[in-house]
Image (cartoon, rainbow, N blue to C red; front, side):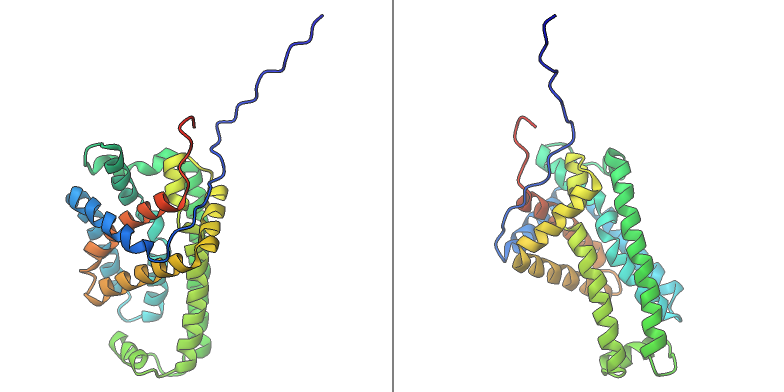
Length: 264
């Protein structure tokens, strides 16, 4: 009886992403490419922009007289942004592949890797709930004045009253934002484009931040700046700025993550 060679073991799982170094001001190029995507498919991009703007308006309207909740929900809006922008990633992807501009295929893009996207959504949801609770605790412990209306609160913030509260609140918020940013820089595009598992995608995203601290800092500041401009324009600016951020995030993924070999 002769021994046969064992059958080769096949593994359909994509390899762990290889992270590349990018230049400090590479995000400027991502925004330029994002604008090209926006012009290529304006109706679909504006649809997502209006969705973001509507969310901001609803949050502000419902919690106008309970701004301690508004601040937490607004931060949660920013934390969940990468997950909500999947349709924008798909628009940029379709343009790369030479496919037609259409809204309907982007609405169900989450089905492509639903299990891992679900895991990632749970992770973001847990972080958001912890942040929302931490936000309330900071208000309870450090906000010393009587709670005014929303406009009164903004006046106190701009006048740097309750400086201890502002310092603690911003510090805690920055910590949560850093955690989410590190886990989401390229994770969702990886899961959509390569069917990557959630853990590898998030680890790859953390490595991307660790290897490119300068460019990631510039990118984070640009995201915050565009988002603040959107809110300061009574959410109207979100209609344009959020699609640009979404498209640019796809191009960030393309530049940061080494493409798969042709054989893969």
